[in-house]
Image 1 (cartoon, rainbow, N blue to C red):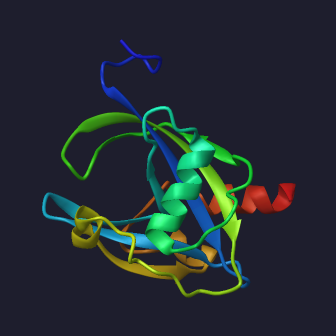
Image 2: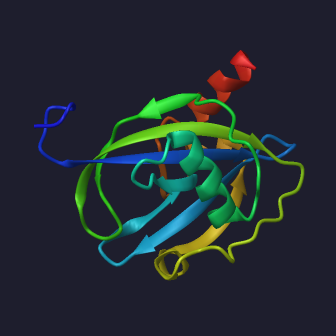
Length: 152
């Protein structure tokens, strides 16, 4: 039994909310054969012995080509889901914000798996998130961003 009361592996992950000058958020579309497409922030699983902050910096560079300090953690979610590799996990996801002036990103650092499943990226207005026809995770992303704006 893990700290969340189930027997699933705990998947520690850093998620990065990348915001441009217009307060749009960068999301990646995942297209898998076993479920409907969905959109998520940049980020991914922490390496063993890697802090959430270290993982955020690494994942940001790998997935966007942006080298920046992820700052402090602004949110935490603990969803259960099935990874793209098909493993049911209990996630422990920590969220960080990076603000950028350019919307140009580089996906050159994507792994072969990411190149296959991360089929698009797009800058979203916060108002679009609630009515978007495909799932956006976390479902509370707009609230997390709005709450962080109020705290900064």
